[in-house]
Amino acid sequence: MIDQDGYRANVGIILTNNEGCVLWAKRIGSNAWQFPQGGIDENETAEQAMYRELKEEIGLNEDQVEIIGFTRGWLRYRLPKRFMRKTCNPPCVGQKQVWFMLHLTGLDSDICFDLFDTPEFDHWKWTNYWRPIREVIPFKRRVYSQALHELAPLLSKKLNKKI
Image (cartoon, rainbow, N blue to C red; front, top):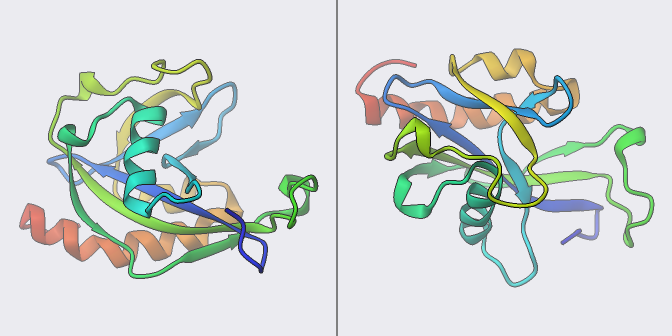
């Protein structure tokens, strides 16, 4: 779903563990790392899209995670011209995202990338909570920073420690 300003509705997923680390996933066939994310389909809520993307991208079911929280509003980023989809009508200039923070209640071994024919990732690791801001592709950094800063107090409260 692309809005009148050219932003595609999307969800982002920050998956955490008991140590306050976040799942950092490597896109298949490249050295680009990011959080799982994906589009919101027509007639789908952000939460429904998040659970669908969670299953499609990292193989987890709703009963293997707990929602800690989500961003209060849309966080937006513009795509560099080389990544813009010129075939969309209206044209897609970027993404607007609701970010969900989840806590893994299942096992690390439950994470799986090959449940579907076209996996997006081929490797993952747990990393320091703030590291993705420095490592994500530059045009996503501001949104990652906004999401992580807004959601950090919720994770700190859950873990009873400073992140």
